[in-house]
Amino acid sequence: MNKEFETTIPDILIAMLFSGKSIKNFKSIIRERKLERYKTGSVRVALSRLSKNGYIHNTKNGWQISASGVKYIDTIKKFSYIQSPFKNEAVFSTIVSFDIPGPERKVRDWLRNQLKKFNYKMLQQSLWIGPGPLPTKFLERLEILKIRKCIKIFKIKK
Image (spheres, rainbow, N blue to C red):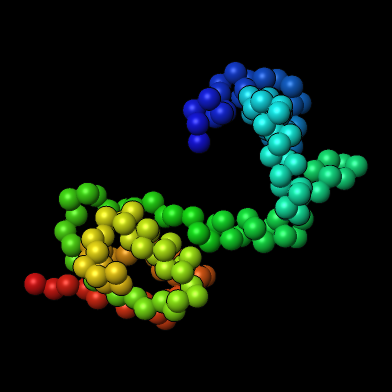
């Protein structure tokens, strides 16, 4: 996130002073102070676009996320990238081979990009070599995307 939109010390102090020791009020004040940093027009355009796509709707209590909005957020979370735990000079000790069906192109592209983030090198389009072992968070994501059975992971021993 951009530094200018992070919570600052003055934000925290103001929220502490005006929250009346209520965590709910404290969080609300912090949220409002962060929102003030955005241009009003930008916020309106974003809300309009999200509403037009059916991800949110305006009620008398304010904006609320719709069922399709929750589904959209879940999709975004599924395809977010996992930070690499490996150093650039890590020894290559793992081979990853995969055979993901054609209709799953988005998942296959995500997997290739994720392996690049882990500093893996492509031997062939579906055969990669890099450091290991792969993080459990990555393996869990493969299960969520329902592609774990399409992937073979080999350890290299000398």
